[in-house]
Image (cartoon, helix red, strand yellow):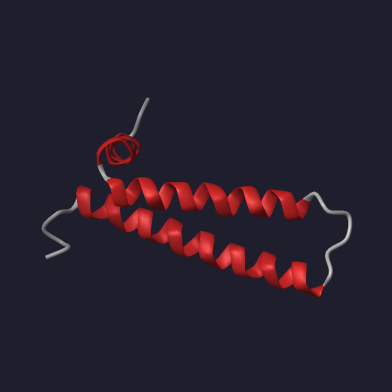
Length: 78
């Protein structure tokens, strides 16, 4: 059973260009993290890149969640 949040997310993915860009960035960061995790050994630079990617991915996820919350509670964002 789809939730209201899922429905709003799907609508935003369809109609909101900014949300689409955020979603694309999130996917790119996830792919880069997956690629890093497949390495048997991570040097210091890789570990720093991994930490940076995780932070960026979280920021993007937070921004996406704010978009959803603004749709759920439009008067709270004013």
